[in-house]
Amino acid sequence: MMIMRRIEQYLVLGACLAALSAGSATPDKPVPTNAPNPSAKAKRDLFADDLVAKGKGFAIKRSQLDDEVIRVKSQAASRNQPLPPEQVAMMEQQILDQLIQIQLLLAKATDADKATGKTMAETKFEEAKTKVGSEENLNRRLKAEGLTKEDLLSKWTEAATAEAVAKRDLNVKVTDEDVKKFYDENPAKFEQPEMVRASHILLSTKDTATNTELPEDKKAAKKKLAEDLVKRARAGEDFAKLAKEFSEDPGSKDNGGEYTFPHGKMVAEFDAAAFSLKTNQVSDVVTTEFGFHVIKLLEKMPAKKVELAKVSSDIKEYLGQQAMAKQVPDYMAKLKQEASVEYLDEKLKPRERPQSAPNPELLTPVKPVKPNK
Image (cartoon, rainbow, N blue to C red; front, side, top):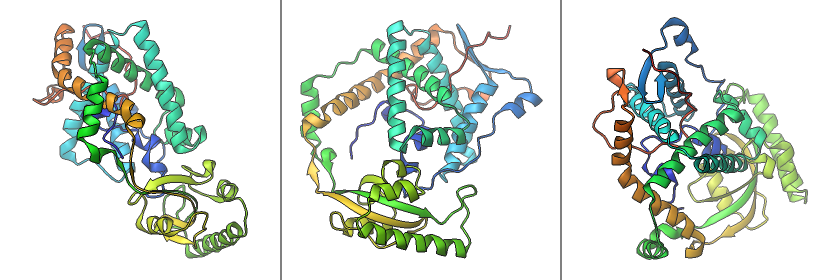
């Protein structure tokens, strides 16, 4: 709906774990079924684990950079968006720059900054659980990324602590007048489109282990079950209970199959069916590329303009991030100079481009090591 994103507004890279906390749970995108990602261990076994960058109090090894590059590339591949070879070199530079920035900012962290980072990470984890339906679903997706809950919380805590340091140092102030002015001057940004709240049951026509199509006889059995579920739902059985028992959409089954969405969010067949229903009406079987769906419309919400009171905190955060973004390049350049940062691999030296703030969703914690003599 909105322009409001948090610190991602001015990051170079998008969140490599976005699929864990957002879209991959919805029926318009397949749930990743990748095995745990390979690590850089093979490289470490064959080659010396050289340093790629260092500064006062920290150093970053090639293996640490490789682990993050592999993770980002695997995430992109799981979303059917593989990175072109010509973009990999730039991506490596950007990831290394993010690793360096987090270390520079962590070196300045106070106890209060660390407490803020811990709270932000825990809040973010709870939000991620809610978005994917349960902690079990989240853990399953983390496993597909080669991560544990502890890994994720550690990563988010360090990145959020770094963000807290930057916010404290830059000390950007946004007034209520600034918020009101932005709201009044950008009315289109606060128009909420027509939306529906609907529950669905998905019977997948793909093998969840291999993501390949099921044989026709198994598809036929799934369709027969979907038709039976339509009858049971129309006869008055609790739809949420049916979804929890039968749905194969891990992102929604634990909350009774429920989603709230505008036009265009779901695949076309699902979208058309949901918006054509009347409140409390149950659809016929709807077939999409993901399988057979049974949909129940719970509520229709007409288009409207969102009240200022409901978005003021988001606007304030957005404006603050925009103001911070203008100061970040000089700020990070100063920290790098003070820490005597050296890039030890010529290919990884950043080219002339804007600096970015540390991405709270991108990086695995980097444990400082002693620089090579």
